[in-house]
Length: 195
Image 1 (cartoon, rainbow, N blue to C red):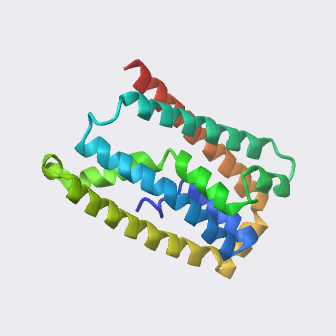
Image 2: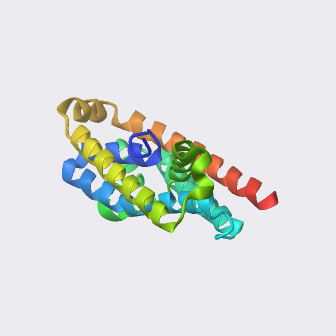
């Protein structure tokens, strides 16, 4: 659910894969997997060992995510052509772009946290380090399955055709969505800092 839910990284991945193919998409999701694991680990820590990390760690992460997505969103919105917009959203170096998106994806943490909280329910207090490791391993398996589905999907002819036909507008809409997520992440960071 974390991987397949539309958000900034999925939209960036779809654009990259539609323009450059499945290999570029696979490299992107491989890089993004590092961030998925980081956010899943932080969600487990937040649920199970809430006092293990200083709250300012989460404020700093939310602020960094917001600034990065704001930067990408502005570049996409202000570009003059579809090709320039594709560059603005990072179609070069897909592995590094996926890594950057994975580490700064503000959707990953709250979605992962909500899913883990729903799965664990009232048993959160009873989870120890070994069970947390099993949960993280299961999440990793789910991330890989979701990534394989996305890589398959991005190579389908109908998706490539749809994307190439409406590339400029899809990229600009993606940029606008990035700005929305950036504002949301910065608001979260601000609220966490003052409360």
